[in-house]
Structures are given as structure tokens and as C-alpha cells.
Length: 95
Image (cartoon, rainbow, N blue to C red; front, side, top):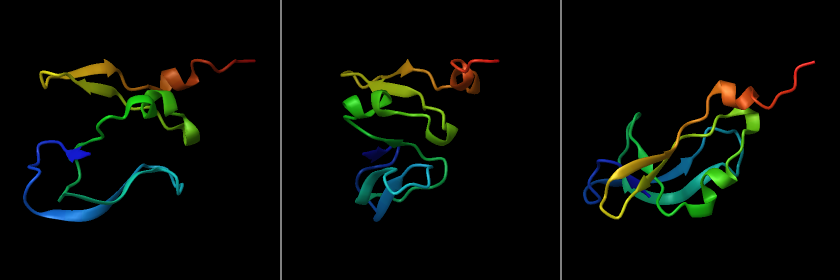
């Protein structure tokens, strides 16, 4: 886990990285040493593998985020777009 654009050396703080849900299991890291972050910083979760989109859900009507891949050359490639409200309701049956 890294903070995009921040040096890995320098001032760090111990943080918990959590999601938006009010659930005790919506956590990505506990007591992790990371560079000091600010609102708007991006955090990259490396080697997510099967724990990315496949484990995603729409609990509390939360939309799934876009997914990106860092290639071997270091390029950032979008591999899945973010969900929209339309996507969320696409499977709803109207009566």
C-alpha cells in the first residue's frame, strides 16, 4: 500500500485505512505506517488480485470503483470503469 505521488521516505504516521461503510470489516489496513496523507490523496493497494472487483459488492448501494493496473513498464492502465447509478439499477425489474 502506497500513497500515490508521495515519497516512501520521510515523515510517516500510523493509520488505519478504512472504507466508507459503517462496518467493522470495511478495513484495508490497521496500524500501517504511511506518509502523511491529505484529503484528495490517492492510495494504491498493491497485489489486490482476487480481492478487487470479484469481492466487491453494492452493500448500502455503494458503487464499485474503477480498477487500474500498473504494468511492468510502470504505466497506469484503466481496466474497469467505475459503476454508475444506471449500472446499479440495470437489473431491477419494474412492475
